[in-house]
Image (cartoon, rainbow, N blue to C red; front, side, top):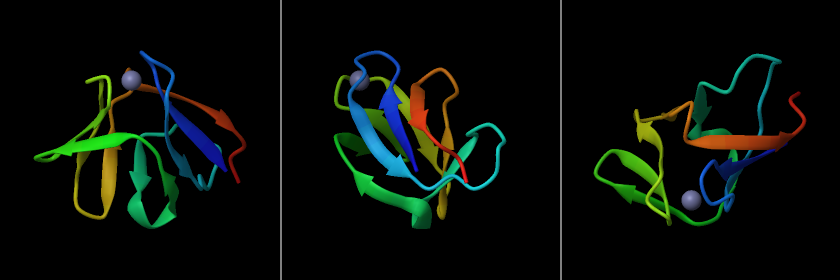
Length: 75
Ligand SMILES: [Zn+2]
């Protein structure tokens, strides 16, 4: 499980079950296990500090590569 954090304020955003060793480019919503402080504005997901984290693409979030960091293990 990965913990996705804001790259600016380091707040936790959500926990994500990442399958595969590749980069985190998108996050499938059905693998998001817990949401912390994340704001949805139209189709944009932001941290509560205003940092843009990703864009809503329906069943997944297309992640902004500069908007987040993560820790934890991939499966
Ligand atoms: Zn933030």
